[in-house]
Image (cartoon, rainbow, N blue to C red):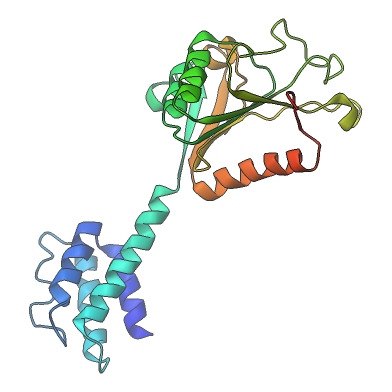
Length: 251
């Protein structure tokens, strides 16, 4: 247990490169060498202390070799780095939004262009924006499966009104989904907004697929680079389809 705690402390106080160097330094030895930790050039006091505590714990653990220490360090570092890749970043539309924080058709383009297998696009208000239409058409052309689920005037009993009641309808190869009026509680609307790419990342937020929402309104969303979250969203929509709540327009 003391070795485990010492490894955990090293992982907290050392950079990834320092942990990798320490693992490489430990691996050839059956017991801690006197030079253990000398690779920590420019390390902090807390980092040096963490390495020293690991050296002591290793020396007091009979049978534990450098191979075991190196393995523990590398496995722990890999887990930390996997966790760091599960990121969420805010994206804004509106005043003072800049760079990656700007949710625009350009940001959507980046996400849609990254798809290699599957796209799920859900929105309350949706208009056939030319740039977005081109991105969806390009995705279909490269073999990406595309599902879209949008609100309609008829299914919302007039709660949602739009002159474009079949957005992106000219794009062949898209599966169009809808939530029929007869399968809703009175007054219910399809108000969700989400984009899921390859079941690995998702954009969830307040913005509809309209020019005003993407360019002018004050809107907030999150790009979540977490496959578990993306799969959860995708699986919920698929469950709605399986239960007959959401239907395929072409079926």
